[in-house]
Image (cartoon, rainbow, N blue to C red; front, side, top):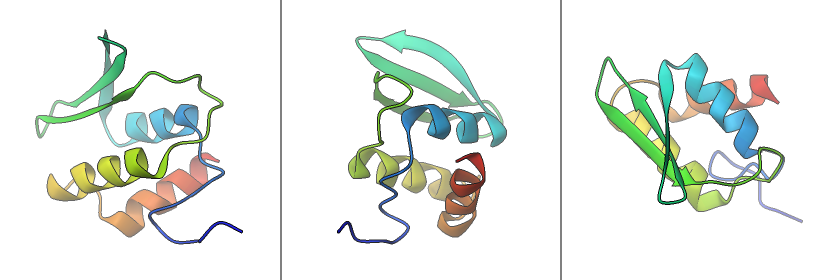
Length: 89
């Protein structure tokens, strides 16, 4: 059984994570070398993760990286980001 916590959400998909990034003010900037690139204009924060089908479950390391970026730039705290992800699911 998977561990539960803010660092893992096995039901979270890449499509849902992209929706949440959009709600937080990130814009999709395209695909570069097989990676999706999102920019938060107000802060300059970049989120980059490999291109996967929207219905694919997010790998824990990608979720942790995105959470770290939004926290480091003051866009959202980890618990707020998790709440946004859960609302999107």
